[in-house]
Image (cartoon, rainbow, N blue to C red; front, top):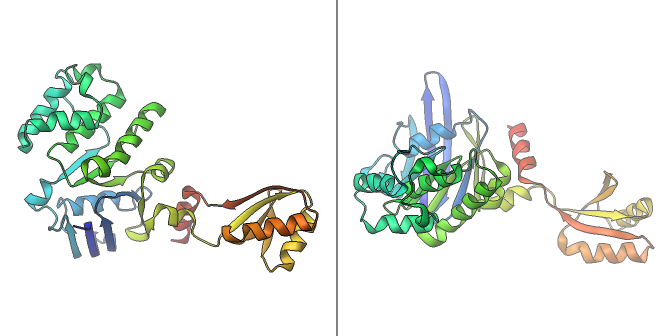
Amino acid sequence: MTVAIQSAGLTRRFGKMLAIQGLDLSVQAGTITAFLGPNGAGKTTTISLLLGLLKADGGTCEVLGLPPGHPEALARIGALVESPSLYDHLTGWENLEITRLMRGAPASDIDRVLKLVDLARDARRPVREYSLGMRQRLGMALALLGDPRLLILDEPTNGLDPSGIQDMRELIRSLPRQAGTTVFLSSHLLAEVEQVAEDLVVIHKGRLRYQGSTLGLGTAGPAELMVRVGEATKAQAALGALGFPVREADGRLWIQATEEEAPRIAATLVEQGCTLYELAPHKVNLEARFLALLEEA
């Protein structure tokens, strides 16, 4: 299977309000895909449609090659929604055993998921003694029981300290490689998404605004090089003579040019007697592009 989630023209209404409008999704299997959008964008409604908790008013959708809510599909999906519900008076192992029995997973599965989330040494401790980061990792272990092919995560780093965020980030990164799991990650922490997800889906007001690689969103728009130079006026004239559009801002020159043209630009500036302090590609960060998409909408 090459596609874990596929939809075409997916639509959902609540009364007169059109919550999801013709949504076309294609989430590749074995990837980490971030699902972004402001509050009210339709993320929760979309996830509910994918899981069969809501019925679509139009369009088609498949999850793991099956209709939403199909028992076989649900058996192969794991989920962690914000803070996991845990039995504090039981140990981590006992919490896992209860869920394992409900899911019909083999007994060996507990050791597998404990190793994946690095909780094997603390599995026999009561959950009330767990830190917030340990509780989140236990919640991830619960979601991974049964060896799911698709893992849906909603704000998995919510409330964690920097160390806990780092641990969760590394765990999520490892899942496609170690467990063969496709990760569909809903989050508003754009900096975290930039470091974890390979692909992005951005929605706003129920419409798809972007679908593609994380790198592709961060570098959308004309390629630019940033230059710090001692003689800005002379440098600007020299670059203009070469045909490069140049603008000056924040004490720097911004040149519409690709990285491949950087050596030529550097050589020209040096030949013209300009003192060159810095020359680097300018990549728009994910947050800036995300906000620009919402403004365009």
